[in-house]
Image (cartoon, rainbow, N blue to C red; front, side, top):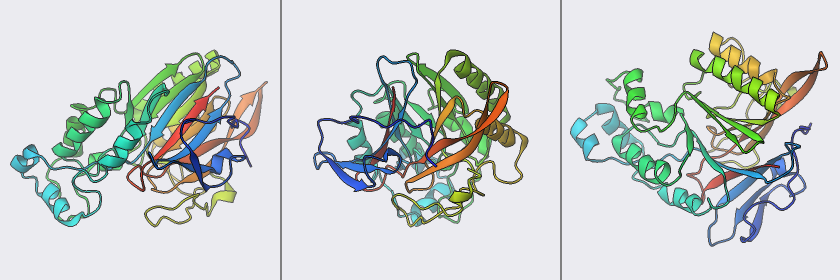
Length: 339
């Protein structure tokens, strides 16, 4: 079932680049992937939404899972055993090897009104990795929104040395670098789109997010805004057709996944996660898309949802786009347009 909220694009982005078809067809944008010509090489997915208001389009660029990594002098002086255990065992993505892909994406930012990174900007928590994010994300992309992923919160990555620090102390380190609220922030673009970034990097939502999300949903209804939700981990779709959802493209060996019964909101969960999931799945009238990463392959799924119209609850779906990590190939992005 294709969501009634999804609007087919007419011309797409990056008009000056030749587009090489990688997956799917242009007639079905939810499953279409193309690569920009050899001057850049970044792979692109697109999502289009119609606000019904006309006027200038809003353009948003999503990237995810940058997995930036470096060790600097401060790391060496701190001598955290888990960091050096990870450095010894973790061979992938080390020593700024994923930075060239980020630089390719930075060359594509012209014409976009907003950039959002949906988690795992770093490979694991080091001062050197945060320094790379500061230089190439926060300083290079004014107004960028960056969600928290699981990798920001750990120093143990394939190593066997436990981290002697607390989770709260690691959050405190991140607060020194994040330029917006790490748990929840939202932004209105023009008179069309309300963007929400929400932290679910611990595999759950938090109490402090519930009321803010509820207010944003109410505002989107009141002002007839397209609400787009950006987070690191996907939510459970409860869609029987997605018990074995097949990726559009595979990276990192990830095959089919059970989106129907897995991910956030599946089964018993804590009160905050259950409440955020309820708000999402009962607000299909305004929440038009969910954008995330985490699984290192490209998926398109549809979350079974509903909304109230004329006093009657109506069934619908919310498109959920799972974008592969930017550290693969020559980089990967989602180009989102709100008409």
